[in-house]
Length: 145
Image 1: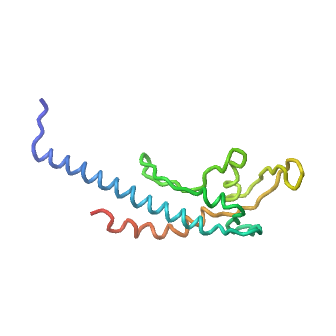
Image 2: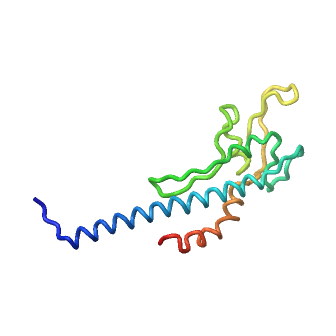
Image 3: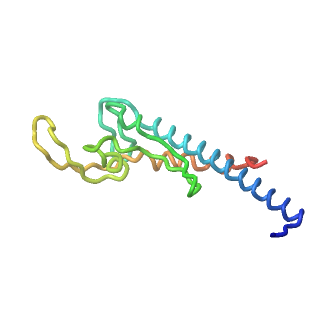
């Protein structure tokens, strides 16, 4: 039989309780932060017909990009992931090309066949994170009771 003193048992229980509380608080704070970054990214994308200027957030012609920005808390890494999901198999790389710039293949553009186009960066996630990041320390303030 393994002997544990009463004092040791109390401190081990207390440690587990504190750790569980910190884990819950971490999940709550980071999830709220992820929601703020998602909302900032969504609101930076304006619905309009014209193409956005390079360096500005992309325009939303159909609303697809704006609707597909999500966030999720990763319990194993204690982190939050925020960003657009793949739109569909054909347009899987579009959000990444919009954020960083690059080349993309366009099919059926005005009756033409396939062709590659160069896209200048139109960042929307990076600026959203930069906008919301100063608020993170205040979210942690007094969060663990």
